[in-house]
Image (cartoon, rainbow over all chains, first blue to last red; front, side, top):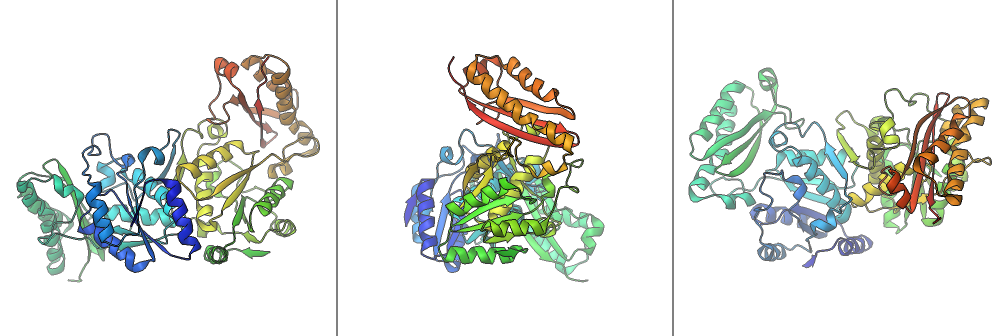
Length: 288
Length: 288
């Protein structure tokens, strides 16, 4: 595995791969790898000839009061894990090289950014879309792999790629979970032991929603209350949002839309202590 | 020359060129070709193995009261002229294919869009940056050629390419003029005979500015007044803006900045009858 910290060097490597007729798989990350990241890298390996993984904790997707400065970092461990996962290029660009003083171009995906995390994190998805566009410009991947845990991010990137006719295929990987069901996240490392126990409520609430949708005809408010009940029962928790809506438009359902819907996205953001966690599941509704 | 109206077909052709190791030169246009367009195509031919010219009158860069519907079109003549210029691919995509109903992604170059045409045409450069990003995504050119008549457009596209790390080199071509000095523009076709005579005032005003800057130490207001005098002397004219500023930041100079400046961009937008014309020159100031 080659570690490349500079953009021109990365460009030269990409050019060489293209000349050699090799396809490039790409996994953009913010590092502090867990089994979820590794699964994305392994999927990229299966799909393409060469795998590029980037590690960049992107400042423009963090709000002023968010956890940019304390976001967990461990370059040595990440490098080892990427190498073990069979990654070819570990791209670790510098913030000053990516964002010059004159930087002033933003990619904005309207509509899909309105609800869910877009509401609690204004500017977040503008930062995500912009950095992903930049990394695509440098790495020029044939396929890029993203996790479904960040459902809205995935939807926004798909939209951006389609709208801007970017020559890359977006591949989704299902959410990787701890044995007890907690969605893998670099932010899980923030959790105390007690908070870790409470954090399971996101998964439990989604499972409860799944069961409810499978076994009974349920109203939208009843479903939301059931989810809220599971979360509120746990200490340290504070709900940021419970979203029940259309997995394509990311617009929330009203009661009527919910009753008619065939596909339901249930997505949650919950503060557990000082840590904000997200999770989601997508259900196909059974006729009752 | 091959005429390609569909995006997937264009993509397939690009892929073939890349596989064959051929470089691609690109000239995006809104058609109704004049010698300025042809000069861009010829420059692209000199610089790259294959030349793609797109013709698309992009609705998202026109304001609601602008001339989208009456923008001059002549596909037959354009096709013939492109063929004669040695163009390989004439790409003529459809608005419905480029902008789906779900389209919602915009590329916004902040700062550079504030003054000049950005002021009189709100949203114009967002439309320009977005369509150029889209066309770059489809055509994947090695080099793209733009005319300097649209100075602000060129600056914004250079900024976008740098900020989004797009793998394309932007090449500028100097403004091509009629024998009497009028900058070539598809919109010149709107002009009546009397208006055509008046339209020369943009070029004349810029020449006057050039002479003034070369031969005397001049104040900013005196320079602007001299420019204004040349334009106002002609019938049918109404000044939209006279911009004297920095050619890199596209910020206007104040008196002090103007006196210290080494490079001066003089840019004009003038209504001649119902036609809005632009022109510009960039000067290196002589010490007096």
